[in-house]
Image 1 (cartoon, rainbow, N blue to C red):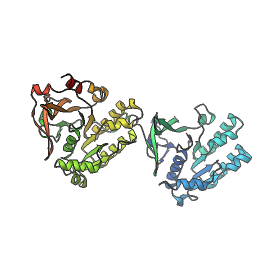
Image 2: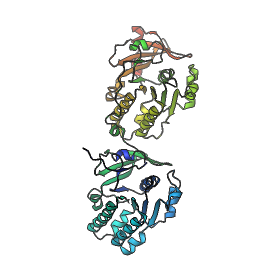
Image 3: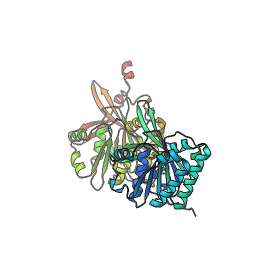
Image 4: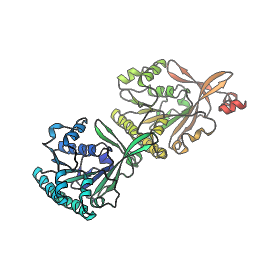
Length: 482
């Protein structure tokens, strides 16, 4: 029988997930990172969470700066509660003890204070100073071991904070049970923060780098989706039901509509009708069977205006909670945060339809491009498992030629249905067309159909283009040759 270890709930979003269920009670951890990485915020966020849960916390600093400056910075964060300071959470500076009497005196003082306050959590901020006070690596090991021994005897969990950039062979790393490394990296002109569980005894931690950000709520961690959802969290709901596309005349070409709980992509150039298609797809939503519009380009107000021009009262759908509009400006986004925001909304609204306007928005958010295939696999698996029928858009310059490489073949292979929207030039007139390129496990009509935008409902199939007309499909290079 597998033994279950007692763990602490950190109340830091994402931290318990990447540490394998939370910090192990009575263990010791190093929180490491350069100045400004967020070590102090993370430690205090954990400390206040433990105080709220009824535990006594002792926060000891070995730094020269006063606690007043620390409180001034923490007071801007939501988790800070001045009423708990000196009651459940005691701050103590032992910088002078360390400087004047050394490590042995520091250990003795810590033992005394832990007993006096009956603390179950000890945060030691300034491990670098303690390390530099030792004459050798043995002194540092002895200091950590003695403090760990006393903490283990009393069931106290210890967090050591250090700004030193040390590796796994450093004396303190070899002694503790876990190491959390906070890093700030520059990707071209952009700064991104990552946290890594570099060491984890007794836990199945999620390896690799996980993005985090510092907000008014403190630190929020977004575990890499392909690691956190390596195995889908819910069972895939393969469905024989069909879901209407919202495009008049298209369902019959697809064998009755989109397969339920499937993922479809609309591929086409700008102006081909992808967003219009999406609004028609969301139009049948009701408060009992809701939908989500997740986009990067159209602001909610512009989306309402576009829908109104199509005869769709999107504002009424939003007010009735039939449709939730989520706009994420295409500026600086965190890839995993986008996914968690969407999945959270799906859970909370119990959405049955999702329209993602712009898969390229996810691609632009990643700072590690080769993640996209695995990330998209995890995201679509979660959406299918939630019973959601999803339609995404991907903008390309032309459908002729090498468009199939963008999105990549690896991503397209994960998509159940592919629909192409294109412009056709005929005798100086620009027409729109739709072609069903793929419907998984279904028979479908592969002919090229002409579509028009109907002011009273969106896209509408008006007939099949003749072979002579279809032959006019091509890129600008083809036009130039003609």
